[in-house]
Length: 220
Image 1 (cartoon, helix red, strand yellow):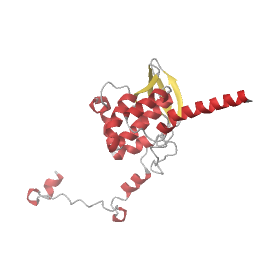
Image 2 (cartoon, one colour; image 1 turned 90 degrees about the vertical axis):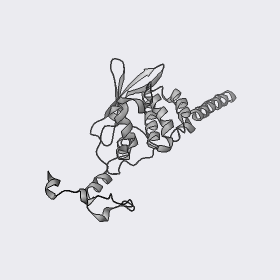
Image 3 (spheres, helix red, strand yellow; image 1 turned 180 degrees about the vertical axis):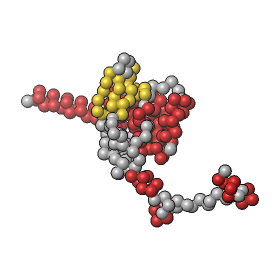
Image 4 (cartoon, one colour; image 1 turned 45 degrees about the horizontal axis):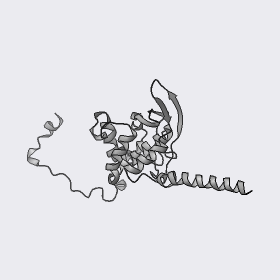
């Protein structure tokens, strides 16, 4: 009995150590690049873990307050030899990360989101829905579901020194169905009752009437 209790205690201590390694770090987005890299050494050993960390870096980048650290996270997760802002191949990706009107695309990969709920989710607590994996010549296509797309989206994953990295993320920033709130705003843009408070706080752009031509000039 004492021997059994000893094994049980050892197992509990091992679980506690495991939770200590993953629990606190996994609760919420990484605070900085150092924490992200430390977690990557463990969670990046699987394709799914690496993909999850990529999205954590994405959500960190979407927040201006953590953008500098997140830039280093994304560079690491994508195995890039330079900052993502300096890569011409990542230009569209970076622009969409910085533009709030595109943020719903990235949120659409979180389980529980939909166009109807405007892709509402918590960056500090989300899950991904992995559908399949397919081995190619020197990389693996990992497919995951986007709630705004009709079919799963595939990302390219490659292993270096025992860790997996996302070497092609193009499908994670391709357009999806617009949020219902955005669609409603477009439909009712002409209706003053749908204006949000403070929407027109900035003064209108002034024009110089002397430089305006005739109505004929306007249409030509």
